[in-house]
Length: 436
Ligand code: NSS
Image (cartoon, rainbow, N blue to C red):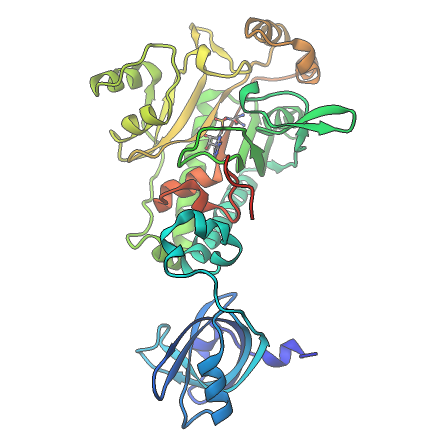
């Protein structure tokens, strides 16, 4: 068995610091190959990026030169070579090949040029196509999104909690619940960790979760997944205005963090880079939003929810993220607090991304009073016994509180201008896809 460390004393990032003429070893994959008559260019991919390796008959033995010529792309290899700084090489440095060991030889790559034109075929082979430079960059940025959110919440004294995935009642309405057999009974997959966060704020005051939520959304849109990653936060002794401030601060923090730490990856996906927005973001009421929509020829009545089409039209009118607040009670889940000054609307808002992208977060103030919540559950035609524990926490010192949820993939689709939300996730789940 190969002693790995002996075969890696450098990598595609470290190599830039190595001296001309030094001999180094790296491990990785052959991501692409160009064969000329007397020169072979291998692009090697490792954890850190890409490195150009050049084989010539003068510098490599016949065996090694022939191996470099015939090695299938995506084979896992160990390579040894001489460092050569050359401004023409992609990172300003390349390796002149001396030795090449095939650790795991690849079959002929099955993703043909014609498959590249079919998103469905590409996603059937997602377990392989994630190796491409664009997917690699997007997935790295995604890890940055999660890190940025964690850093923001930790700096602001939020406690990370983990909520269950099997649950017994709907947070966001029964229509999008996934029901499954749970031994002799039934359970559902969680749509949001919000109710568990609400229980936990009576311990920690400020909590957050970063975990998957599930929605049986049949709508096949470019912005819906059946399984998405949800960044949610909840704060005690906080109202709707307070939570909007947290949302805009978080979004701005994430944008700045990504720009600082992932600019290379961002350029791979979007040449112009991402736009940075600083708070405060504009706030318009539902009523004002409706007026804008009417002025653009959209026909809808007060009290109807905005769908993807309405949000697109609305968000085309803005070039910064903006809040729409004061949604009618008829458009929001039962747990939303009605505005005491105007009970037909709720103390809630959605943060909309500009340029047609639409909703990326949704939040608001919750009902903290037992009787008020009980009555609203009844008025929504729901069964209070389904919400027993959620009601009971209101009997034991529940302060005013507010929270929100942000969809990781929605956020990424917006900032990177991805054609489809599935591009923002490793193995997307949609109504027509649970494979691979
Ligand atoms: O349904 S939400 O609008 N609100 C909630 O789930 C609240 N219970 C969150 C909370 O207050 N703790 O979803 C919140 C966000 C929404 O703005 C989207 O960004 C994202 O979650 N979301 C989705 N992303 C991808 N696919 C689907 N199907 C999806 N549904 C919501």
